[in-house]
Image (cartoon, rainbow, N blue to C red):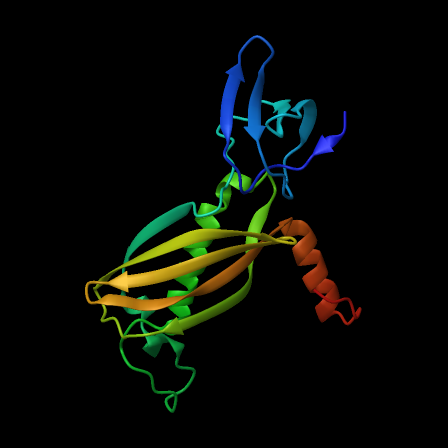
Length: 198
């Protein structure tokens, strides 16, 4: 059977078949997948194909506009002051831009968990964001990531961060799925001067 790429943007329905230990998924659009799916019975009228795969406990598919929120309380460790490398580096005692970006990454990474196979992780590739307002220590902030779709091998997200006063940061973010062992080996070769790119 020919491997089928899995849906990221589709109306999806699932049916669990206990007799054959498989899950049937009806999808309308096929985009790159890290899971093995197979053709079974294409329907030429509705243009919906049936695929079958070994049942994976908790398996999910990420669809366009699916979102995830994360609530977090800002601590002293999140302060811009923590960025100081010497006494001449002066920063205010508010939420650091870098920490806000980190929260954005974590939120998007959690939304991608359903796509990962054992031994895989997602990593950040690009961030295009604005830090719009300061947030004091001890304030509660809320980040929301919305999945925008797949471009090549990159998973795109729109992310906003709010505190009690309103939106403090917004932007777009892309991530990729990697094997950590391969990534670390490539990083070591780069530092060693092999000339290989990322």
